[in-house]
Length: 226
Image 1 (cartoon, rainbow, N blue to C red):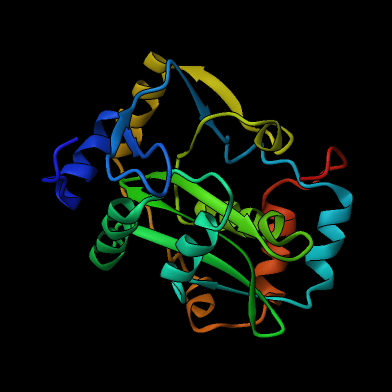
Image 2: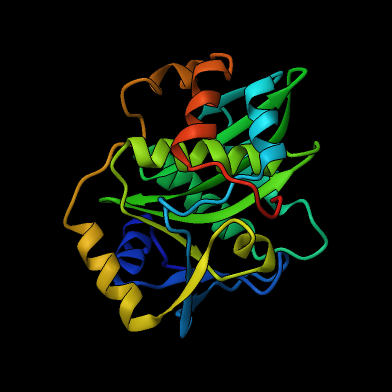
């Protein structure tokens, strides 16, 4: 892909149903991806195991939104194989400054324990990557993210691909045509990543109130742990 990729072009690509990836962190090229089967996580079908629900209610951690976007992206790239190269990192940093990319952080003992980030357009959230440095770090991040998206009126949570990990949470694969139809519908509406009752998370409030929302509004049930 030419080096003229801009944040505006990236947003148009998401609206068209495609997204960028690099072959590795050292590959300077960025490629468009348009999967035949698309992973989505139904916001009313997120699976929370009994053990995770107990972990959420027990608290002992802190949830914030957009406090350390760069730190979350960097943590997601800290693995042997990653599609996040320097151009992609910069593009998402630009989208974050524009208000189109957001992160959700989980903190324990003052350090990042887990997190997730993605892109927002209309009522669609395009999940990009997540990480975990402590037990249940990414599980807690996803549970709180789903609760936030539901409260904010989102209709589509795009996971790009379906992995066994995501399938255990309730994610499914749908054909490209069906995904694009759902995307077009979501783009016609406007959701709020900071709905009432969640604004305090951006300033680093404790996980108590939001924890109850994450354990209940996602439909906690016994099942496969994340």
